[in-house]
Length: 195
Image (cartoon, rainbow, N blue to C red):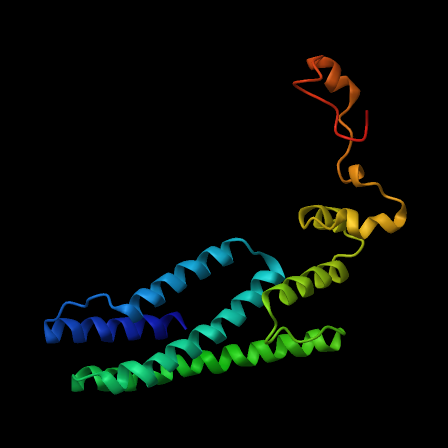
């Protein structure tokens, strides 16, 4: 895939040099760059299986968007014959990774289905987040991360209250030895509910 992308960029650079033109930003290129930056930030916040699933879903969506832009905007509106030929010739370099990404996405959904999980395709943002929480709960059971997940997602009290948990119990008390070191309750008070 990297070789395909480098080949397309090389061909485009050679054409630009041959035609002696200077590429300029336009609405389409600005949107693609903004979307790429947004996606990069989203990937930076993920890891493990969550990253892998988000990555493959993005690959499918990205290649579909690029192919749609090529077929629907760039090729039909191109007035330069060399550019139009280049765009038409690089189409397979975008369609092959799309086919591969769709196959991987299909296989991931099959594995999830066999494990009793539903497909991630066409879910809303909130539904996807809930599915990820459920998948983490199932896959990481007995790994000691459930409490951290509940705390970090703000669900600790709502999930644990059926076990007689009180709202203040989502945090631990500050050890008395630490409070006595400061010896000033206005600066360093005990956590609420443990007074």
